[in-house]
Image (tube, rainbow, N blue to C red; front, side, top):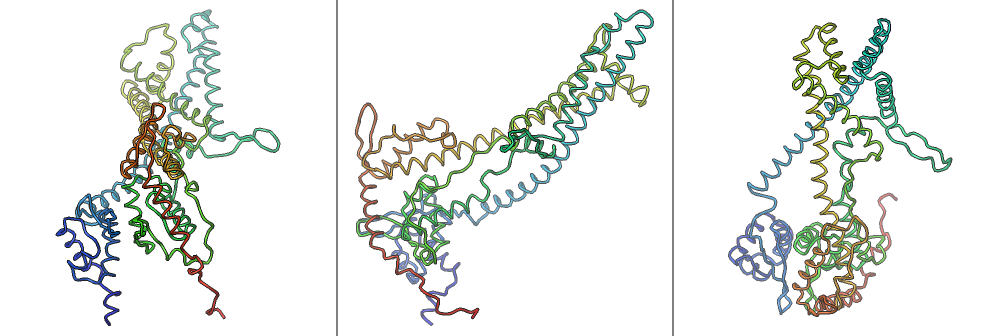
Length: 497
């Protein structure tokens, strides 16, 4: 029964006792201190500290005697419970649902507006051209062909513009992308609905790194399994591209999820052991930190450049026509005779009053002016705002990708860290002012490890002797691990037989 009480216990009461003890200890304590302060079994305190460290962003130190000292620089503010975190999760859920509903309605609206107004303006353009041709013939019969051409919409140019606009629209509607047939060398058209191209233009291509947490977690597990169940904080930083603070928080979560334990070597090196991850049928070969996956940058859209140009053209047409009708409705009260550009407005006014029975002074400035003009501006504004937000996200992705390379290069040779020789490889790991990012992170890591700094060639070179010692210490530890002891062995029972 005593054993059952130790290993089978109620988590929350034990957790509360540990938290209260930590507060009394001013947020710094060893497991032994907590055992003495709470009277709880060592096993329960050890297991509970994994949860507490994860929830309250705890950190760890190693004392001179080799003991692990837990401390909480952010205080005992829960990341999971309480009014603040609960409110954040609630607001995040409400906001996410609202955004999805509004995005769906907005997608329907932009398709109706973009295509509908484009077709309407093209139709008015064609009608104006036909009216101009009819007026030209009538004027020719009365000997006034010259005056008609001066007052008309432009004759052949109007016909050319109208026919080109219609042809372009049909082309983009049926075939929004053109790809080259690699085998035959001939251009062939790939059908893609216009609405999907428009949605991608406005809302982007979605998350380019779906399920990233799972991808990253699998990479960490593969590395741990390939390195005898042992990983250090610096190695974890290399795999995830996180700085020490964020990496510590994430590794606390991994300790809880995969039954890991923080331990200290005889030389005082803190590391994390995950023996349970070694009890597998097929363990991978030893991995290296360079195999850490990199995030993909957010593209503007999933369309090719020509498709985006056509969509831009559609909206520019709506923008120009909206501005045109608003201008002649509000600015030019009475179009002057001989103003060829006013012909379209005049024909539209006749159509509205004679054939539709509407007041052109009311319907034209609102329906053909303000609405399409505002819509077109909004159509361009949404991707501009989205792109600004994606730019910030891309900077974080580039920084994370670059830090993976930076940490790897430092671990390669801690005794000679020359920041000038650490450079990004590719646009996906080149954040703005990357030299500053590099120099600041090297200085931060060097300061944390008590590195020696030397000036060489007008620049500083760092010798991080503690990190070199820790790596050699961990290498010795890994060599001492008998991986065969974790072999699951042969099958001795099969329920299917």
